[in-house]
Amino acid sequence: NGVQPGTYYGYRVYGPYQPDGGHRFNPNKLLLDPYACAHAGGLTWNPAVFGYKMETGDDLTFDERDSAPFMPKCVVVDPNFDWVQEAQRQDVHWDETVVYETHVKGFTRQHPGVPENLRGTYAGFGSDAAIDHLKALGITSVELLPVHSFINDSNLLDKHLTNYWGYNTIGFFAPDPR
Image (cartoon, rainbow, N blue to C red; front, side, top):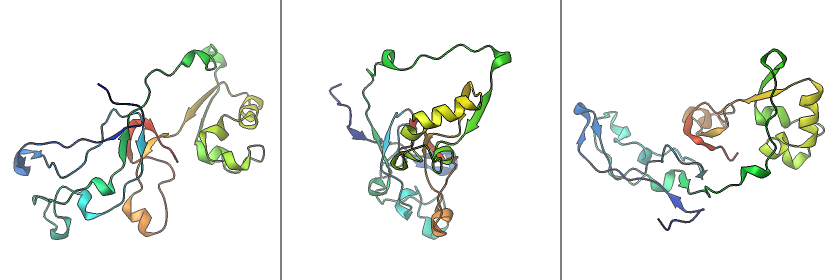
């Protein structure tokens, strides 16, 4: 109650630290709300994000470092979005359905009709040029590859690469802001 849209938050969970019994409560670690509808910031790989002292190689140890500076934060969103003004879905019979599976960034990043500043974005995917292209192909339904919030694996970052496809999910209900 009283929390406004745009407020950042995370959870701290208290309880026993008994790894042998399956309990790894560690209030030093900021946790994300699995039902958050938005995230801000990214994960910075740092030993503090682990619940154990990873330098020891023993995952039964207890790490007291605060992970909050290295963690993305959940964001409270306005639950009163008015979907009435949005385009209505059209009914298409199954025998006339043509599904196109695509990735927002991959579909738009080099499309010549999508404005350069919108390439790789949701806005670019919703641009007239992108929609016209899909319609010209006869597409009736689009399935987007992962659009939810995800993290980059540390081994990719070490190679100066990123998780392009988005399969390392941290929030199924939070669209990735990239």
